Length: 418
Image 1 (cartoon, rainbow, N blue to C red):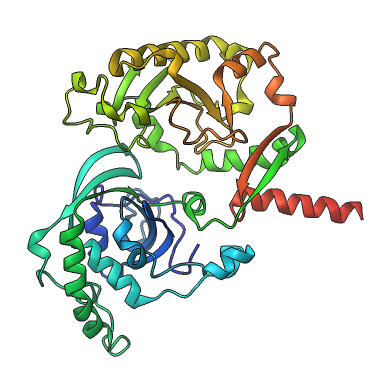
Image 2 (cartoon, rainbow, N blue to C red; image 1 turned 180 degrees about the vertical axis):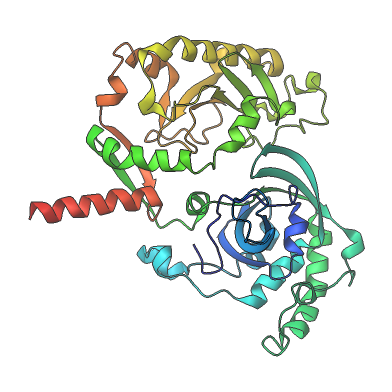
C-alpha cells in the first residue's frame, strides 16, 4: 500500500454512497496508477472522508472527524489513454521485472501526474448502473461536454495545492488541457467500477503483478495459516455487501434465481451484458453477448467460506444450485445446459461460498490451477471429509498477504529444520 493509502477502521462514513466525481473533487484527492493495459486501468485513490463518531461511547470525542482513506477505480475500454492513466505508478517496470515486492519499494507520489489524471476524469459524468451494497458500485462514464474547452476549475485549483510547491503545475496543466479535451471528445464513454472504501486485501489483489507461485496447500497449512487468514477477513466486516445481495436488497435487476438456500445473479464481470436496469428481459434471450455469459450463485447461509468447508451434507444444495442455475440460463438466455460450465474457485475472490456459471467459449477465470468443476466436487463429497484431508494446489500472486504468510511460514519451517 502506498504512503498515501490509509487503513480503514470500523467507524461509519457519514455521507451517502459517493459518486466518483464526489471523490475526485475532494480537496487533497490523490491518484496513483496500479495496473494499465489496452482494455483496463486500475487506479488507487486516496481522499478524505468524514467519519461519524456519534454512536461511540466516548462522549469526549468529537461528533465527526476527517480521515484519509483509499478507494479503487477500475476503468474498462480506455486504450487511447494508457500513457496518461499509467503516468503515476506505484512500482517501476524494472522492479516488476526483478520481482521486487511493492510493499518494499514503492515509487513516490507524483502530484502533477495525479492532477492530470484527475483532470481527465473530471471531464466525465458518471451514471450509476448498479451497486452491490457496501463498497461496490458500477458506473457508465460519458464525456461532460460542458466541462470541455476550459469549463470548470482545473485539477490544481480543485485540489488546493500550495502554488509555491507546484509552481509549474498550473502552466503545465493548461498546456495539457487542450489535448485532454480533444482526447475526451474523441474517445467517448467507458465503464467504471468504484470500490470505496477499499481494504488492504482488495488493494493487494490489484497491485502490479510480480509473477505467481504454485502453492501445494496441505491440511496442516490450511489449518495453521490459511484458515486464520480467511477468518480475519470474515471478521473484518469487508463482506457485508453480500448480505444485501442474498437478501435481494441490492442487484435486484441482476437476479435470476432466488432460492431458499441461494441466489443466482448476473455476474458484474459479464461486461457485455445488456444494461440490466433498462433492457427488457425478453431482449436478453439469444442476445449476442451470451458468448461472454457469466453468472454467479451465492449461498445464503453463513459459515461456508470456501471449498474446504464443503461436506456431504451440502451435496443436495450444490445439486439444486447447479440445476436451478442451468434452467434459469436456458430460460432467460436460450443457452443450452451442455454449453455451460459450473465451477468453484480455490482460492476464491471472496470468502463466502459461491459458484461460477460461464459459457464454454468464455475461458475467463477457469484456469486449471484454480477451478474445480461442480460435477467433480459433488462426486468427491461422497467422502464427506474429502476437502478436509486432501492437498489442494493453486496459484497465488506474489506479494499478496496470503502468499507472504505462506512464504514466511515456509522460511520459519526451514530455519527450524536447520
